[in-house]
Length: 261
Image (cartoon, rainbow, N blue to C red):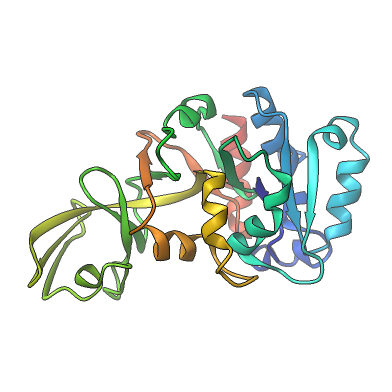
């Protein structure tokens, strides 16, 4: 699934007249780049959600003989559902026996997707591609790389379904090692690892059942953080991950260099 429904506000004024998915990098729309790259790595079915200038994306797909056969549109024209709500709405479009690769339309990367698909083991519900890049917000993982929560290292805010993690007696944050060490009355002193999320993940259709109690509109990360204590959601570290978020005007020049290299 390619998330392509966003408003693209950071790419204004380009997105005043077109969806972010059709913004060109190296004379090729972002959507085309992702589909063609994944197709070259063996993917043959794509679900693309649309909202902002939805008809432009629908027409673009229909006018391309290759894309018309590969792409199914999940139309969110009436209401933008965010990433979790968009995935939930699209649930009937997927094979319930296949894991779903989820990719943001504005991400360029160097991931080997055959390798990544093999990291999603049969007993795992979701696998999130992560790295050690510097950011303000990190996912929190235990030593087995199981998702435990989320932290903003500037504000110290922690989100987690585990109360002892969300409200520790004492927390020590090592910003250099990207580790969070906790003291809590109910648990022994424990150290957790912090990794940055890439926006790329593998999702088991088994999780759709848990989504039934969620509202129409919600973030996929909110879903992961609210259910990680009763599901098996893991992080997958890719060393030397090269990733570029084409979300701002000043990133377009860097994106050109990225695809050319």
